[in-house]
Length: 64
Ligand SMILES: [Zn+2]
Image (cartoon, rainbow, N blue to C red; front, side):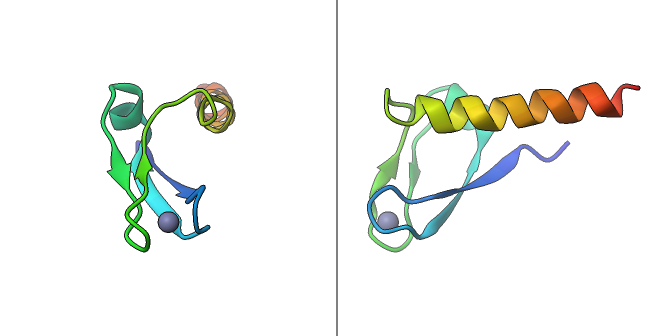
Protein backbone atom coordinates (compact mmCIF):
# COMPACT_ATOMS: atom_id res chain seq x y z
CA UNK A 1 0.00 0.00 0.00
CA UNK A 2 1.21 3.48 -0.82
CA UNK A 3 1.67 5.33 2.44
CA UNK A 4 2.70 8.62 0.87
CA UNK A 5 0.36 11.47 1.63
CA UNK A 6 0.19 15.13 0.73
CA UNK A 7 -0.11 17.83 3.35
CA UNK A 8 -0.30 21.56 2.82
CA UNK A 9 2.75 23.36 4.17
CA UNK A 10 1.73 25.15 7.37
CA UNK A 11 3.87 28.12 6.36
CA UNK A 12 3.10 28.67 2.67
CA UNK A 13 0.43 26.15 1.71
CA UNK A 14 2.65 24.37 -0.82
CA UNK A 15 1.76 20.67 -0.95
CA UNK A 16 4.39 18.50 0.72
CA UNK A 17 4.49 14.78 0.04
CA UNK A 18 5.51 12.70 3.00
CA UNK A 19 5.46 9.10 4.09
CA UNK A 20 3.10 8.64 6.98
CA UNK A 21 5.15 5.90 8.58
CA UNK A 22 8.34 7.89 8.10
CA UNK A 23 6.72 10.82 9.82
CA UNK A 24 5.47 8.66 12.66
CA UNK A 25 8.99 7.22 12.98
CA UNK A 26 10.32 10.73 13.57
CA UNK A 27 11.55 11.54 10.07
CA UNK A 28 11.33 15.16 8.97
CA UNK A 29 10.09 16.30 5.57
CA UNK A 30 10.87 19.70 4.13
CA UNK A 31 8.71 21.99 2.04
CA UNK A 32 10.29 22.36 -1.39
CA UNK A 33 8.98 25.90 -1.63
CA UNK A 34 9.93 27.56 1.66
CA UNK A 35 12.04 24.82 3.32
CA UNK A 36 9.81 24.69 6.36
CA UNK A 37 10.34 21.39 8.12
CA UNK A 38 7.40 19.10 8.55
CA UNK A 39 7.75 16.94 11.62
CA UNK A 40 5.44 15.44 14.14
CA UNK A 41 4.53 18.20 16.55
CA UNK A 42 1.59 18.96 18.76
CA UNK A 43 0.02 21.10 16.06
CA UNK A 44 0.42 18.46 13.35
CA UNK A 45 -0.91 15.61 15.43
CA UNK A 46 -4.44 16.50 14.43
CA UNK A 47 -3.57 16.25 10.74
CA UNK A 48 -1.70 13.00 11.18
CA UNK A 49 -4.53 11.65 13.28
CA UNK A 50 -7.02 12.47 10.55
CA UNK A 51 -4.81 10.83 7.95
CA UNK A 52 -4.37 7.73 10.06
CA UNK A 53 -8.11 7.52 10.56
CA UNK A 54 -8.51 7.55 6.78
CA UNK A 55 -5.92 4.79 6.46
CA UNK A 56 -7.66 2.75 9.08
CA UNK A 57 -10.98 3.24 7.31
CA UNK A 58 -9.40 2.22 4.01
CA UNK A 59 -7.87 -0.87 5.56
CA UNK A 60 -11.16 -1.76 7.20
CA UNK A 61 -13.12 -1.43 3.98
CA UNK A 62 -10.45 -3.27 1.98
CA UNK A 63 -10.49 -6.16 4.41
CA UNK A 64 -14.14 -6.91 3.82
ZN1 LIG B 1 6.27 25.96 2.60
